[in-house]
Image (cartoon, rainbow, N blue to C red; front, side, top):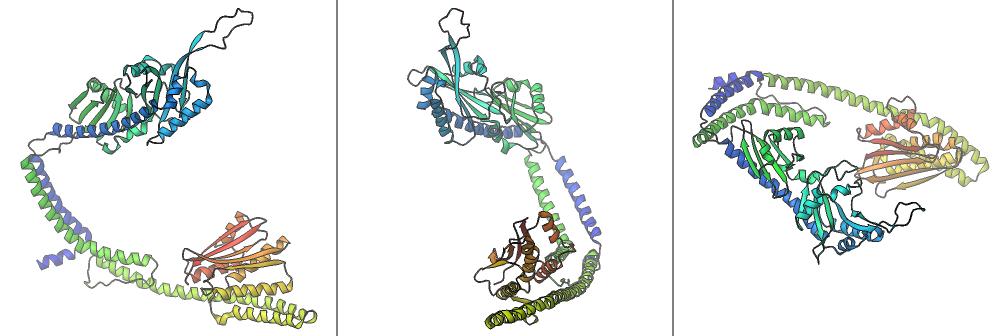
Length: 603
């Protein structure tokens, strides 16, 4: 047994999988053959009929819940005083105030219920034709009575309804025959049309006078087809079709193409001829049911499955087969887990950790000294990891040297030029200004260079960084290079946060040289430092000439050969924060430019 285990462990992964699944396949074929041979009888029709009946019951209950909800709305409308007074009025449409009052009552009632319905309250009345078409020379005849239709509605998306059809025997006549009850008209396309193209079902009832029980008018509530569709959405699948249709074969709603339902109705006309219908074909089980006396039918057609019912003997056989399969799969799972899954998962977990940026690369212990592909993968990964670690050390060292060289270059670029001009300015002050002013200038220059050099450190506090800028601007103002004011907002608590040196000074210098001075008028330099979501924003704002979108995009490009000072500053910031720093520019031509540096905030 030990020799077999050793032989199996030394097989390639492909061979292991082939052996395991070859055995599994043989066992599965034998079990499936026994399973299908053992099937003695299947009560397919009974099982599918029960399932269809359950679905029809559930769908019918959902449909009736929607209709009952609308019926409750209609009952409230038919007893509403404003509605009744409107319908009792001989000329109900001549008073816009009354119309608006009725419409307001309709909206109030609708807002008390869920659903998005449109409501029409209609009335026909005989009125005198007070504007007959006649010539002045013709003898005047007494005005005639004409039948006119008035209505108030809550919909703004319906083109004018077909009033003649609404009061036809097909609509009004059928509703009146219900004697206070309601009817549902699935096909209302010849009466209502929506601008948005949505389809609806019309709920109709005649409004009777509460006192005399005489008809006053007609109430129509249009139900969105989406509410009807929702009644069966939870019961449909790829193997089951549910549809609503009327006795004329009009497809109200279905989860299948209308053509498929029309074909079904043509082949089985009994669906719309009987209150309930059931049939079983070779491939499908079909059941239909008429919903009370609304004229709407629910059709359920499900695919026939040969595995719907099993005999007791077959159940015992299946249970035994399942137990055997479970044992076999457990055996297969154990060995796949031991020889393939766990080793690969171990390697995958280590690679996921390394992918997050950990350095150096973690190496894997190959204690078992496996000689299959997994062992080769371990060895190759370790060799690659060792090489990557060496390269990382080299790259990190070169990056440190490059950042240090750039810092020195920035300092050397600024030191002579700025120092000579400032000393020249102080020399002139010695002849023209008071000793106190000359001393203050020399002290400012000393503080600036003491903070600027910072004993060679690459990281200083926010407070020192702001001091450098303040002294730099003060020295610039001595030279009268530009007229501007400087403003500062530093969030309390951030003064001692460490940042890389010379973030602000190069940006402020750019703002003055390329923003304030070219504009030729007094400007503002504003520095804001605040925290947000555990990150710190360092913003430099100037009211200079600004930049357009093309200029800002070009400035932020890494390969932009211009703006060495800005690009060098951004590179130093990103290097200091290990690429966890972001720079953005918000600017408007002729008005302002604001640079936002977003870095981690470590208090």
